Image (tube, rainbow, N blue to C red; front, side):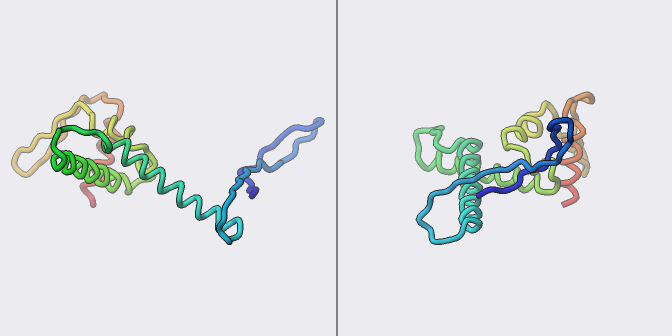
Length: 146
């Protein structure tokens, strides 16, 4: 299957032309469907495999933390739960939604900061020139508004 990925301007013999850049996809399958349906089917499969890989890689799936099966089971379930919460937190804005989970952990979770509570107010104390401070505060506002 061939699709147009984008159009680019090229100079050929002193003349500027707009030409398509094609993207080719080739599948071998025993399914009795046309090329477009097969492409959509494999695209869904690819997305599912990406999700599985992210969950395995970012929730320590397959790692044994203790010698107790049930303790490892609950630790893994808590990791998946935390991963899912972080994905839900990032759904409000495209800038955060498309980030890899590891990148999100590095700038949002592993940040040197302190959350203090006094009375009914919660305050974030973070280094004022922290590289991700604006992004952290923006995402925090989005979560509070939900």
